[in-house]
Length: 210
Image 1 (tube, helix red, strand yellow):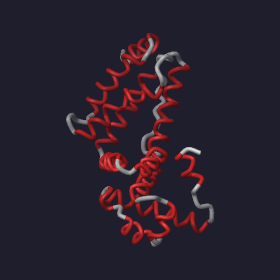
Image 2 (image 1 turned 135 degrees about the vertical axis):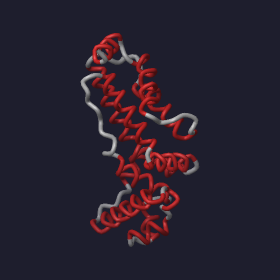
Image 3 (image 1 turned 30 degrees about the horizontal axis):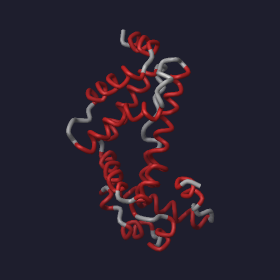
Image 4 (image 1 turned 90 degrees about the vertical axis):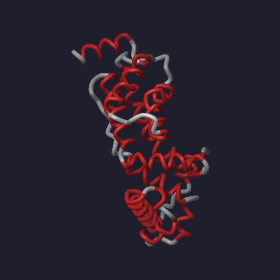
């Protein structure tokens, strides 16, 4: 059983435990929205949720793990999956959405969680499970649509394609060396897609720009 599966296997099933978990996640979500990761301490989560610290630690290894799950669940529906009819349209729109997300207050929380997970391996597992896994699966769905239409290069692994498209945005978020604007997002998408699209995909993109 891998770490992600272990998280689910350890989930409480009793209604009372489920209610406590939901209260903890709702409280953590509110604290993150109000003050970022620094505000989501175990003491603050316990006080706001009415759930004891002992119970919180029974189900999460650290406050970063609680925050990662709460943030991931809230953000799961924040970035809708574009379906424009072309790979160029889909990925261009998605890069824009992700860039806007990173430029928002929620992007700051994302950066805080990402940084905290570097030194907290258990929290990193929660971060991958409840945030990254869902987003990467969504992008894989878009990539498969492109493959089905013959618009993206079947020789490129989807994981590599995702890193090429969205890695620059995370780098900008964490370093602040360049802006996260619509114009910059479009330039990143254009540069990445030159190597990811097939001739057919580029033809569709050119047609859509007419």
